[in-house]
Amino acid sequence: MPTSTTEAVTGADAAADPAPPARRRRTPSADRAPGPRRETLLAWGFLAPSIVVFTLFLLYPLGRTVYLSMHGNDIIGRPSRFVGLSHFQEMFSADFGKVLVVTALFTLGVVVPGAIGALAVVLLLESQVRAQRFFRSAFALPFAFSVASASVIFAVFYNPASGVLNGLLYQLGLGQVAWLTSTDMALISICLTTVWMNLGYGVLILAAGVGSIPREVNEAALLDGASGVRRAWYITVPLLGPQLFFLIVISTINALQGFGQIHILTQGGPVGSTTTLVYSIYQLAFAHGTSDFGRASAQALVLLLMVLICTAVQFGVIERKVHYS
Image (tube, rainbow, N blue to C red; front, side):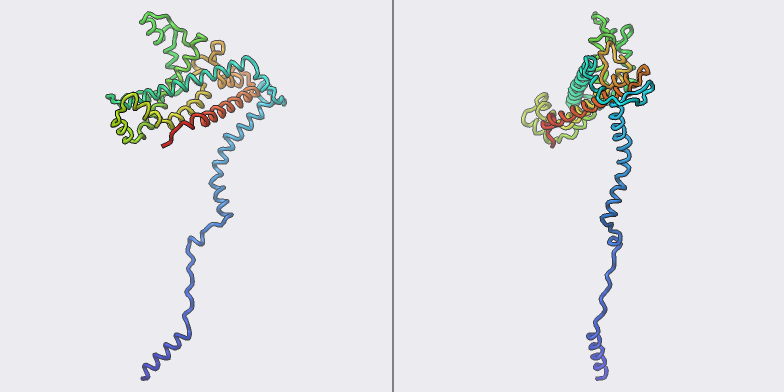
């Protein structure tokens, strides 16, 4: 009886005095959760390196180019006087029109044969050809050559007295060709050199695209009786649309900026037949000690506008026909 009475009293006291509520533990993640201001500062911290690089290597050069294009300069190239848009007005001349025509012909002569040639090589290599890896590496090899080394090689080929090409023509009983000294052949020779230099890059891009085509698609085409040229034209080429579009855009931009091969092989000649817009900028700004940075900067802005227009047209026209799987 006494024991049970004590237990009853203890139970009643426990019921009368409830236990204190347990304290919530603050998790480390809750303590470290950044507020809106801290998140903003963190974002700007990550963006700061990119903004600095973007400003130093894009915005500042662009702004400096616009500034120089509206100023004349002294004999050593320092801005001396404000001339407004006079440098742009000087472009409405026959000489600058010829430069634009040469630039357009050079771009077309590089982009179109380069894309078609790379596509033809890839389609041939993807057929049942022995030593496929060897030929793929051989066609991609020109991509490893620098512009200077490739230009020197072709300078030997184009040599009118001891060149390989004229030697072959002589063995065939054909007349000699002035590859780099004829106004009719100089630009064609530069285009051939550039196409050869860029062929390896195009082959690599399109070969990667062919490798990404599902095997089931080709097997289904074979079961339906499509083979050879029909399968390549109706199956492979449409599925290579994204890679072809990328290759055309990049090749166009590179062609508009082509310089090294022109400088080494022809230096813009003969009679300006290979003077593209980039080479004209070089001649105004650096060649012969002219230092005419004002007119050169104005032409550089025209080149930038041409690149933007070509890219916008390609995205607006060609990309609509591209099938993304």
